[in-house]
Image (cartoon, rainbow, N blue to C red; front, side, top):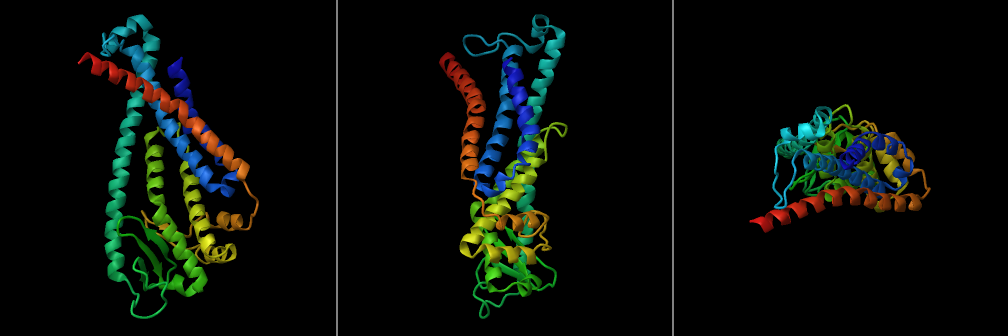
Length: 316
C-alpha cells in the first residue's frame, strides 16, 4: 500500500500536476512563489519515486534485526505470488532506472553546457567590438561584450567568467534606458544563477520516462526565470521601459546554453507588465503548498534511511 501511494504521487507530480499548474495565470503575477512551488514539485516527484522503490525493496528483501537482508528477492516470489512479485520487481527496476537516468542527465547536461559556454565565451572575447576607452559607460562594463553584426543578439553566458553579449544591431535599436534594462535583465540571470535551476529541471525532465513526464514544468520554469529577470529590470527602470526593450528584442537570438532576453515568451511577458493585479494570497498559498508537498516524501525517504543506517552502525 505504501509503495502504491508513493508511486501514485510520483506519477501525479511528474505528469498531471505540472500540466494543471501550467494553466494557472496567478503564477505570472507571483513568479517567485510559483518557482518555489515548481521546485518543490520536482523534488517531491523524485523523492516519491525513491520512496516507492524503498517500500518495494522492503518486500523483496526481508530486513533482519541487524538491518541486513535475510533473504534474496527471488525467494519472495513464492510468498508474494508471481504476479505481485513481477509487478514489484518491475516498479523497483523502474525506480533504479529513474535514479540512474537522473545522475547521468545531471552530469551530461552540466558537462556539455559548461564546455559549450567556455568555448563560446572565448569566442565573444575575441570578437568584442567595444572601445572601452570611449563611448557609453553602460557598454564599457567589464562583463559586456558587443559583436559587430547587424543581426539582433542579446543574451548572457553564466559561469565564473560571466558575460552579457549584445550585437551592434540590437544596440542601435535601443535607447539608453532600454539598453540599461536589457543589461540589467541579463545580469539578474547571472546573479541568481537561473541557469542552475534550468539545468536541474532539464535533468529531472530527462530522468522520468517519456510516457509519464510532462514538458509543462520545463517550459513554465523557463518562462518564470525570464519573468523574474524582467521584474529585476523593472525595479531598476520602469515597466514601460522594460516593455519597449522586450518588444525591440523579441527577435533577438541566443546560442544553445545561453540565456537570451527575447524568444517566444516575449508576448506573454509584455502583456504581464501591463497587469497590475496582485497575487499575494495565491503566492502565500503556493509557499504553503510547496512546504506540504515536500514534507511527506522527504520524511518518508530520510527516516527509513536514518533508521537503517543506525541499525547497521549498531551491528558493527
